Length: 222
Image 1 (cartoon, rainbow, N blue to C red):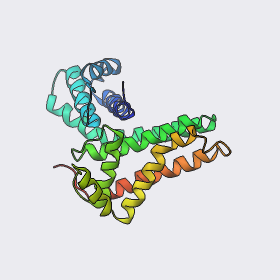
Image 2: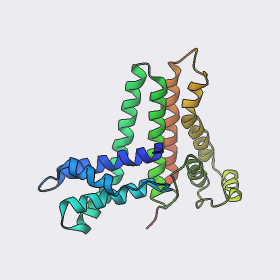
Image 3: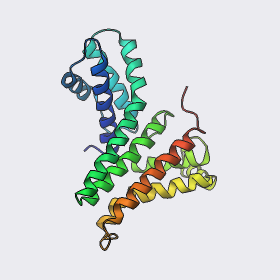
Image 4: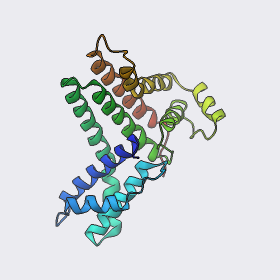
């Protein structure tokens, strides 16, 4: 079964392939690219779906172009970060559309995907696991404390203890954002469903802004 993070990684990969296909000379067939990606996209028990999707997207472009493997690999890698932002923007647009139709749970889940895309990309750039829900909290703990990936529960607890003010806010916002769908299901917003949109947008924006800020202080891989 595909997890939400795996679906997010797939969405980013399709955005990359869509954008690179049209810029190629001659342009590559988008349907063929998508099929090549799916054939090489192995997500079984992956702890690093963003990294795996990036590799599969690069290989799909190389196999379809049939030439200049190094050039296509570079092109796809350069296109990945803009595609993450494009995907996040699309999630926000879709969430607002869902809220407008009164589909509050769908909107909240889509905003949580925007959070997953941002944290997954940050983690992938640092060789940090990001495939599970628990990984998201380890990412936030590492960012909040400016430390390395917490390998043990003790290191995780230490990272939380050493978190900056922004790091603690990030952790709270992450819990609120990813927990919003459950809050809706539990009836928390039953008397005021329209508050879901205001809170959901605020939670997601806070996570993304703080994670992006803190990530600048924790270098990615060389």
